[in-house]
Image (cartoon, rainbow over all chains, first blue to last red; front, side, top):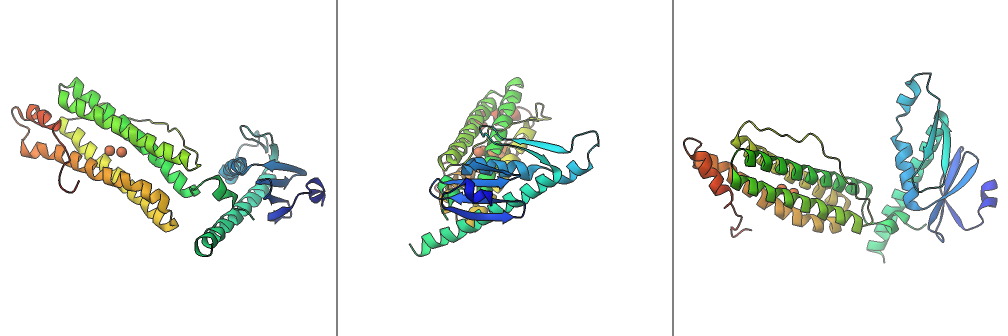
Length: 120
Length: 177
Ligand SMILES: [Fe+2]
Ligand SMILES: [Fe+2]
């Protein structure tokens, strides 16, 4: 995929769906989000804020709101260069990816926590 | 894979959120005590007004202590919005009843955070919380003692004047303290 071409560092796959993926770079201590045809680099804290914001959307409410309102959401974060213009289906897909990635972070955290406490 | 979550800070999302809720509760308590001080002052209970001004300062101090812990551990401390603070009270006694209810609610809230710390084995935050758990013993004791004055002294005649005189003297200095 173009993903691998864009980033040549040693990337670890965190979570992937057919709509996009999240990779982690241990060297840079950052994350790469591949979604909607673009690759964006995030610090962990910016990425957490993105997840928080995406998860906070009430999808049901968006689907049932007035037809006069646009069916797109513009997602921006303070002090973060990336911006997304998402349809509701995109929003659901991104939400899946971010929730999946954070479940993996949590799992990794639990494993590391045990390893460091009982083995190291 | 590096644990970026852990590198960023020590707190889990749940503990961070509980601590931020507590920041808000302490700020809320501080505002309530300030409002009680106002009512007491307006109604001529000078010692009680002084007592509540002091309580309000203490709550503000609790708020900041939690706030700084959140920041020290790599969390995001959120400055809370406080609304709906009662201005009028129906009686002198109602103030002290509310004060005790308030402190009991705060103790319960800390117990809840402590339970979460045990569940996650977050002994670092647990150790930090111990200070608050001990503080709540004193807070509940003082609030309970104040309310008891209404029974011990009685509200008839110069009762309220006598109660107000004693409120300022409440101190937690038992052997258990
Ligand atoms: Fe407090
Ligand atoms: Fe208190």
